[in-house]
Amino acid sequence: MGTLYRILQDLGPFPDGTVLKAGRTTELKRLSRNSIDILLNKEVIAIAQTPPLAVLPGWEAKAERLKEVGIESVSDLITADPEEVAEELGVTIGGIEKAVDEVKGYVNGG
Image: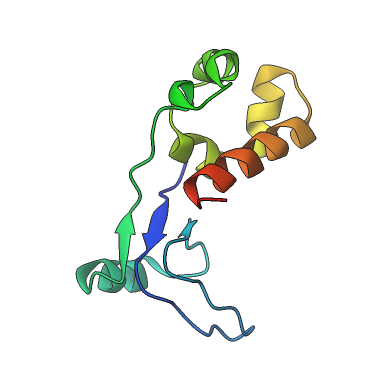
């Protein structure tokens, strides 16, 4: 599992024209570790603090199931490999991706 970052100031544009807007959360997979460290030091990004899945409305049962494979927080779920989680739990990748989208909406205020 990776690290989830909160964007504190707009980032970009990147070569593909993408701009990461302040207030969003992302893994920043497109950036090197060195670039991430620089952005952290300049307080352009911060490591996102996310709640346990069990505190999300309607997530008690899902949280218990995900806990079986070591996923306890929103950040854990977003940064996990959906294919591995689906295989370990015996569910579809689509189901895991839907759950990830749901919690991304939670952390991004949407």
